[in-house]
Image (cartoon, rainbow over all chains, first blue to last red):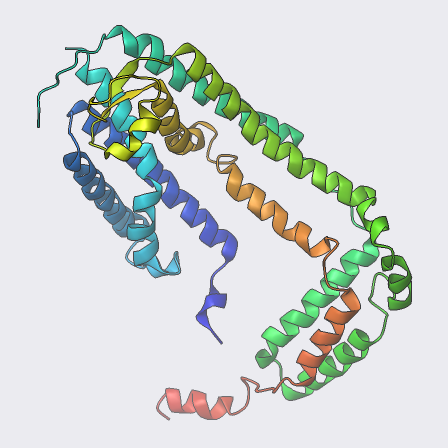
Length: 106
Length: 259
């Protein structure tokens, strides 16, 4: 008996969708924030990584209710690692847009 | 950090940056709606095919979960499944019929069912490509030849030919880019925006397409013959070693409770 069968695939997928939703909003908001702060190059990416990890940590603690491995098959990897690269384009887009809007209006 | 040595007209962002973004968001939403409208309603399968599929599922779940059965139950089920899997009772098309039908590969190509499937796939890919080409031409014709924005991060010179397309200043910092690169950034980065606007349902259309294609492949022309699959499953069941969870259960419960 492997423990894989104890998970329902539909529920796992819906949990992932919820995490994705949180990460979508977080990356857009972080993009806007770093645009407003007119961060450049590495500082912006640092803000992104730190901010997203913070949001992921909150998700881990609040939504996971202390037993996150009930909701995800490999919680650490899925919550903290896999979203970082996938949400990068959304962040970069918002960052560029808001940066352009803010920096040229001087 | 060097100071900004180019002054960009603030009007650029109102008349170039925002229009491109808005157009791309709207086109993406329209494409989402069209794909949901064009989604074909699932067709009814002939009952024999459904029965065949479900019987195979049943055999598979028996193989996977046989440990919860007592030895007697296991024996009865094994006997029944073996008999049915090797006979033609649950096959949608009996093997003799199937061989006569499958001999002509041309008949499969002209099969209306397969054609419809290919039409749907072609349609969805067209819906992906046409709007993108249209927007790209629009951006290229209307907004080419000038710099619209400064990216907040430095890039290597390799991107110069792509991002500063049509700007004849060879020594310009690569951070200053033309409209087409804003188009590319949008193309990559708009997915979260779509998923927030479209209530997270139809946002990830690529993922959905992949999921739709999986069940299709089973029924596709290259699929293995069902009677072969049944035979293989029968062999699986034949070699199954049964270990019931009930054997020695009393002993284990007693041990666990320290008695």
